[in-house]
Image (cartoon, rainbow, N blue to C red):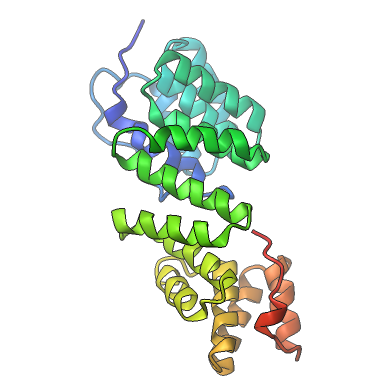
Length: 272
């Protein structure tokens, strides 16, 4: 039976389900709609797949969304959802194929375009990623345009174009002051620009909503050192070690706590 899927019901949750737990750190998860439109109410595999993905049960989500893809081959939303599972699993080529299929079915499904750009970026194909993001930036105003601007700024960070990245994240925050990931990323970019006061302000603002981010704790601590607050920096370094003892930041924090000194001119290599 053919179904007419409505993008307004669930599509805005799709990026949140995956990108909040991938290296891109793009969106905050939102729950699946508890009162779906009747036209999608019996898409059990589709809805269950999204719910499983939101819980991090990617292998199970993959099974049910592959089944949904067979049942609804002409559904752009199902193809996009399957692509998100593959993106979560870091199977970038297959994820890109699903996002491309979704766009072939419905060229107006801008979520799939943004998702494909993220997959290209994670795979290291920055040129193709930028093409997808710029296509969104050239389009009408909307949430996906803000997300695309954020992603372009992430791309600039990967290219070590720190000033462009900082400017981009500031534009994101001008559009949406609640886009907390933009504070985090702008803080990291400002650190690279030696704006330690601005970086610390952004990182502390972000840490109010996510206290389990070891990298944010680590760079906040380094900013505190530059301001002569070694006593407070120690607490943030200890938290870094507690959260991620085997990470690059955790190892550096441990060395710092064991007595090594830090100089802003000898800035640690950015491992993001």
